Amino acid sequence: MVGETLIRALCAAVAAIGFGAVSNPCRRSFAVIGLLAAAGYALRYVLMQGAGIDIATATLLASMLIGFGSLWLGKVIHSPMTTLYIPALLPMVPGMYAYKAVFSIILFMQNLSDPVQAAVHLNAFFLNVIVTVSVILCMTVGASLPMFLFARRAISLTRGRKKPGA
Amino acid sequence: MHNSQKLKEITVFIADYASVLLGSGVHCTRVIRNSRRIGESFGLDIKMTVFASSIILTVIDAAEDEMCTEVVVIPQIPVSFELNSELSALSWRVHDNPMGIGALKAEYQALLAKPRLNSWIVTFLVSLANACFCRLFEGNLGAMTVVFVTTFIGFRLLRFLKKNRVDHFLAVILVSFVSSALASLSVFLQEVDANIAVATSVLFMVPGVPLITGVIDILENHTLIGFARLMRAFMIVLCLAVGLSCSMVIFQKGLLW
Image (cartoon, rainbow over all chains, first blue to last red; front, side, top):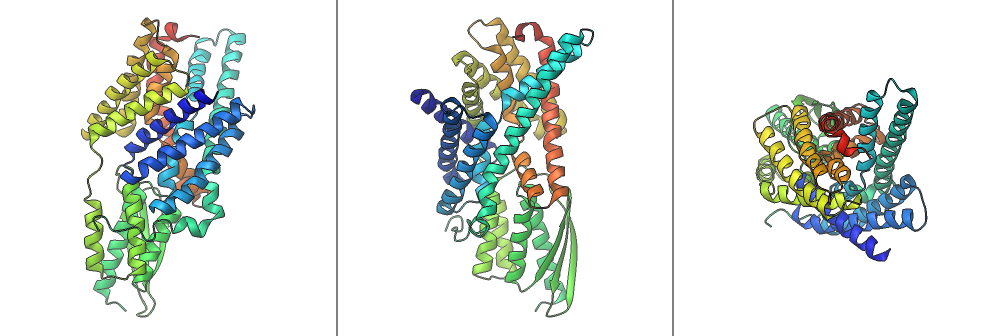
């Protein structure tokens, strides 16, 4: 399990850096984004696989770790929290559940004449949508929590940042 | 103390600053706070109303009993975390070491002129990211390779469509269809987890920034703009689903599990 956790943490770091690149982050924040993503994803994986915690609760705790990490490291590199934790959260987006929800709609529409099959697909659709929405909500609330708890510190992270080229 | 012309100049600057900050994906409270901070450095008070596509800003000079109002449209610019950080830092710099409006404008223009990351490097990084994402969904090496290639093609296509000013929602549908259809071809390759490859192939377009800033805006009582952002994110996800559904209907038999 340790080996698999490390591989997943590495993949999460690469995924966060790559997806973050679309939003044009500062060059110095790449390493922090990767570190936060790896730590958050690894924690969620261990909580789910090792402790048997459900995906929503595990995501909430992992995103809190990412949120507190971005508050601390944001001060070090003078970057706002959101520019660090948004890309770091992306590897935890429940893409497979969203995909299954879309697939369930297609299968539901194609089985309207068979009430039993239609009910199975409709049930699968709601299950996947509920998991997707819950996980996204937990991600956002968990990572934003430190911003509300330590508001004064969170709003002054960019204070003292050097002028570019200075 | 400012004369009317100076007050107008400061108002136009702060309105432009706020609109660019909001356009680059910053949540509402921070835009208001940073703008107020700049206003305070000139001894001015600022009242702002933020809508999804425009900002109404009133700058008040209490000493002269004068005020100036400006309405500005929020530009449709790509999200930029660097601009987000640099513009926030600029508001602190002018707050801690007050400077003239001329010097402030010069520094602001220099920040806006900074080039973004090279587009081919971004394409490579996004493709690699999506391939790693595929691994997180239990995809094997074959699926990761397929996802890397389809993401590379899809991302370049998205850039091309945006450059040619194709509507963003239409572009997402097209790219989602092309990426997932290419990934669906892997149903003919036995060593590839086709379902995982198809599911992951479109995820590079998930609108993470508006999804998260939308929730933050709602939590901070800016419900209107929060919902507008979430609605936009939802529309993009819907477009992703439409493009994905089209290719899934075509390749359905190979994808059923």
